[in-house]
Image (cartoon, rainbow, N blue to C red):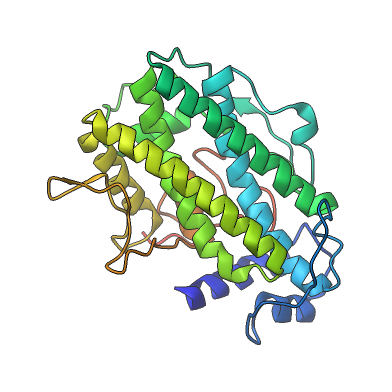
Length: 314
């Protein structure tokens, strides 16, 4: 898994880094062609931007990976902020390198229960904090929020999962259950994306921070999976899981919330270790296509940064 991830990163990051002007030879070495490892970049103080560590080669790798994560955090933050509060990210939290895009769709959910409303609000604030942290960490290297579609993309995802017919519309903001199913589309992807990216982060401070974000995303995912299970929405959730599997690779790794009639709140392997996704697998899911692509689905114009194109496997 790691070797394939590293080769995929090199393929799409060399000569496409919008974050750092590092020449080809040094970028190859930074990306791990001669062996990745944890760089001794030193401990950075709070508020220190990623563009400032001692090792600019490590910074190139870290910036590309963390900017990829920032694109995903923009998507999650917009989804949850709209659902919980009917708000988008503030204008001072969306600028950066690459093409700035707007957000289509989304509205405040009329929650029926106090618990789910509070869950949504807490997750929204967490995702907002993630956006702020990554932007501060990346400094001038941060990418802008790309164009995000929260309207047609959800309908396409629901159709791919067989939840609705070809002429129907799925609106995750329509009610609580729809919101929970919409959240389920994202949450497991975020966990596996951070785990897959962790080996490429060379600065120990940012590696620890990424591990912390992964843990928070795992809490979110577990919460969503638990609530869906308690509401007997296992069939719908499992259909979404199958749809993700049909998009991200030819390997059946995704897991629904019900397996053999029993609860499956923690998707893990036989060693109880969560699985990883390469950035290309993640992009296939958010672009909603198994084909090689550089845009589509939730990101109609693609994501910003060095890692923007999926391999595809169909």
